[in-house]
Length: 377
Image (cartoon, rainbow, N blue to C red; front, side):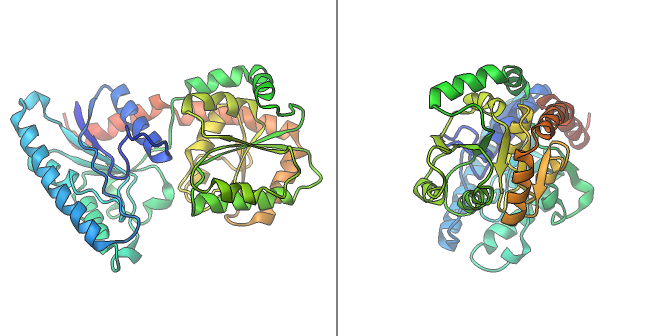
């Protein structure tokens, strides 16, 4: 089946790495693994984070014109080359879909929304237009696929909502896990990191807002375990890097290692070489880094925000603490640092859980079933 794919927040081939880009690419990979041909319909970005109605109106006009061009292009193609379904990933009031509903209606094909959310408090105010567009898109959708259980309650018509667990290609992470000792020795030598103390790992972009808040909460929690020996490795970069450095300025020299941004293909080795992923996850949806860590056999300590409990099994593959509770986070960290056997047991459980519930093949099967239901024979 040929599927038109669109991500209004950020196209999957955008040069800037992010969780949105990663998940869009994974969705396309899973659809292809299920035997579909997936075409990127457009690179139009509809996001307006500033709440500027005039800018949103311009995007809406551009979207309408783009949708009409797409319709003409598809209609000029032979029937066998036209899409049989349209899928939009990540639409909400700041990044509505101005293309999919129009094109799918014009072609008479199902419209599928993935990871959509509604915030009814935005029904009025500077993002009212984006909110109404998202409401209209969801009303038009033949299926709404939810990766985050926290979003499901706000979605209309639960009969059209399908759950899909966050997923990844687990193969490179399993391979890295099998080479844990070798990878740790290599990275210790490369970056001058003592290999004896537990390695704590944080992987996140450095940007103002929620990410910076998480970094600051992590620094405060680490200050709450002064008697424990640890090394913190941070992978990430961005405009808030000076503020992140300031947050950790009080740490004992030589304990915090800021490694900068890494390409995705280098991360499995670092996950596997570490002892615990630590991330307060302030206001996070679910955090792909948390799933990647577990795929490499790395247990997780995180704040229980959003849908994180759907990928971190509390007490089994990691430990979750109340969102924003730095004292609870520090207490859990203290206990885990003192319990290497517990961390090893969680590492094994993490590998097993990802392999049984969160792989690309499982996502392909789930997406294939949903597509079969909405497109028919």
